[in-house]
Every structure is written in structure tokens, then in C-alpha cells.
Image (tube, rainbow, N blue to C red; front, side, top):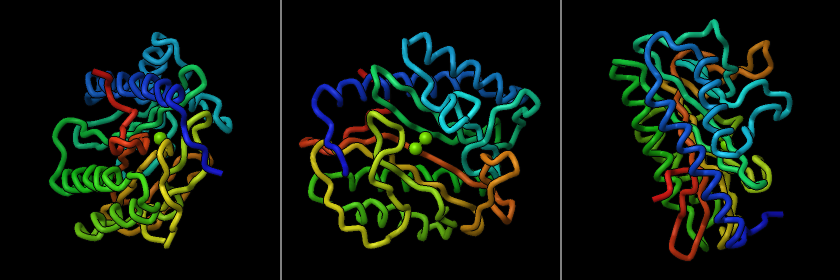
Length: 250
Ligand code: MG
Ligand code: MG
């Protein structure tokens, strides 16, 4: 069952999302060649704690960190490590979750480390564009397939691969709630109602669709080794249109 969020729940989700956005702001500030993904994780942890929230990912199904850090061909769920340092020309997807008074904000962003090549620039641009195309369909009385289709169309326009095994999801009191949201059309006619909250998160690949999970049981990478990008916002369907919760509050 998909639960509609009340006015009070939406307020708390805005707050959780604001904290997630603060973490992203900080990540952007400190990200430079030579920083380790563990250092990024420590910084993220402190921003979340300073704002009296809980790092949603830490301990989730045993995940050992507060953020996921996925570099280049890594798609999602990369584990921060002191021995993994980003370098000039990398792209890194940083996924952040914060729980505030029991409600969750979930947002991922891909960042360039220094100067990146044109292909990676195009991939990041396309994936962000796919995210906002999807968000624009998060409207009352649309169906879930409208969001999926909008994401798929952007990916196809650029001729990029779409990760099939992972997708968006309902979010609220838990990070993963119903419904699951595909990043390509599956014919899901579930009607979007006022108060539905969904994390929309396209993952696009420069090459093919196929991905594989590493021996650490978390890190997902492309099979062909080509780069992947990931952008995600938590979005609520409201009478005034799509409300992105994971951005800074004015
Ligand atoms: Mg996420
Ligand atoms: Mg998510």
C-alpha cells in the first residue's frame, strides 16, 4: 500500500531533505583530487549529526557508512574507504540519506572531480536532465509510467544505457517504501495521488545496461567498465505540483 504523507509528515520530510542538501553542499565544497571517500563519509556523518538527524544508510541492511560513493564505472552503493581517493577526471556519485524525527530524505548527485572529459560531461548532463524530466511528471493524476517514460525518453535521446535492476522508490518513514519506480516504461498505471512521496533516481550508463555486484556484496558496477551517473531527489506530489524535499529550504 502506498501511504499519502500528511501535512506534518511533509514538513518533517522537508527538514530531512534540507539536511541532505546541506551534506551535498558540503561535499561539493570539499571534493578535490586526493580526498578519500572515507573522509567524505566522515564529513557527511558530522553534518547530519550536527543537524540532529540520523544517517539513514548507516547500518541499513548492514551498510557500514553514511553515504554511498560510486566512482566512474561504479553505479551505486560504493562503500567509502580510506584507501580510495578520487583523482582529477573522475566522476563520483554521492548518495545521502538523513532521517529527521522519523522521516527520510534521500538524494544522490554525481560530481566531477576537477576537469572531466566530454563523454562524462554529456553523461552527467543527460542523467540530471532525466531526473528533472521525471520530476516534472510527479503530478497528481499522472501514473507511475509517466515518470518512468520521461526518464527513458531522455536516456534514449542520448543513446545511453539505463540500469534496469535498480530504480526509484516510495520514501517516508522508511527509506524504501512502496512503490518501486522503474527508469523505463513497464506499463505501471498506478495513479499518483496527493501526498505520495517518491525518490526518483535515474542511473544512466555511457555504454550498455548491464551491471554486476562486487564481492563486497554492495558495490554495483557496469559490466563493460564504462562510466555511470546517478542523480536523485525525493519528491512529493502536491496540489501545487511536484515538491522536491531534498533541497535547501529558503
Ligand atoms: Mg539514494
Ligand atoms: Mg533512493
